[in-house]
Image (cartoon, rainbow, N blue to C red; front, side):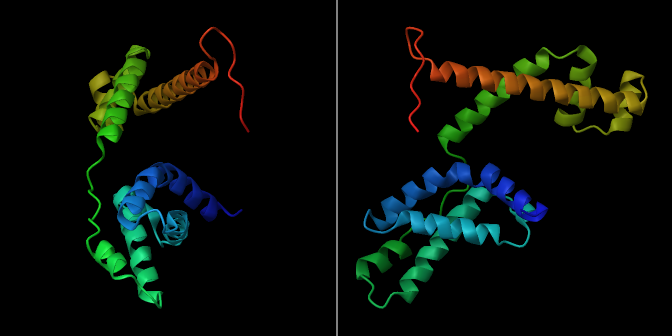
Length: 193
């Protein structure tokens, strides 16, 4: 697999796949259960992957909804026999709201709280460098001036802090995975493959 394709698939996995359930639900509510929602979703994935510059998509969720809606409209145009209700349903399809769902807002807040807890446990200089760089958006030179250290030290502390955060997140995720596989009473849950 070439590097561009690998990057595209990683982008799709990180920015579009998380919205599949929401798009599928929206399509089911709009088109009804008789229509093949999964075909629309798979076609949307193909079209999104073929987009010339994925990094320029500001709102992947809204883009996914827009592509799915376009596919449904294309299918209706190509159909030889179209139910009048289907045309009315598609024309009445609401444009997806660009605002995140309450679930996504809650999830993001929980993640932010977790990051804040993890950052509070970093060594002080690492924490200060990360806060100034990533939260305040200060340039490396300004951080070095404020802390009275070289830019090289700032660069090393930022890398060290990010590495520690990544390790902490990985350990937390592994712990969460282990806990989710254990049933109450200490017995392991059986895997269903």
